[in-house]
Length: 194
Image (cartoon, rainbow, N blue to C red; front, top):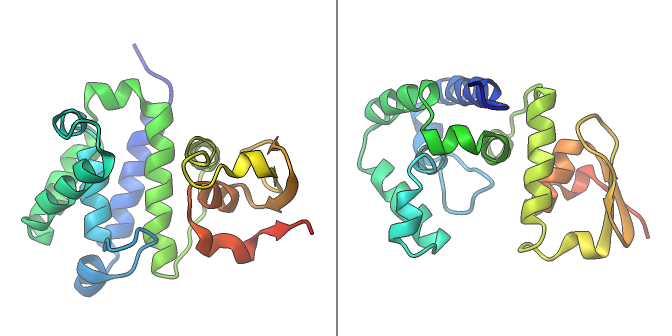
């Protein structure tokens, strides 16, 4: 049985690894990302840790605690060890990840953008990933200021449709998704109605 978006999830994982391979050691170890306090290696450790949902259960669903443990685990590995583990992770998503691929593709896409944008880089984002980033932003818009209660977001590129109520915010679908997910650094790319 082929689950929706599992192949796209694997492809996005491979694209993330290509991005990470392109980084210098300094960028990999301590480069800026949009995830406060996390270098690219930490973002990688986090997205790899999502394949082990038991960590969230052991941490009594305290997401920040579980994420910190994932990052700490990754920091105990050198770059070569972490990247070797990541190759296996990219090719063999866990069963829980395959079942939730539609949701986790958005999380992965956002975190890939966290790395690229933090380092001042960009890429051409596949449409399925752009749409997943937008969906992820919609999910996270509630804890990050309930944006969809106060704004109507209107994508100006493919991958999303207008949603929300209130004053209009227009912009590229990926940037809107990132903004909804709490990445305020993308605001210069958006148009806010007055």
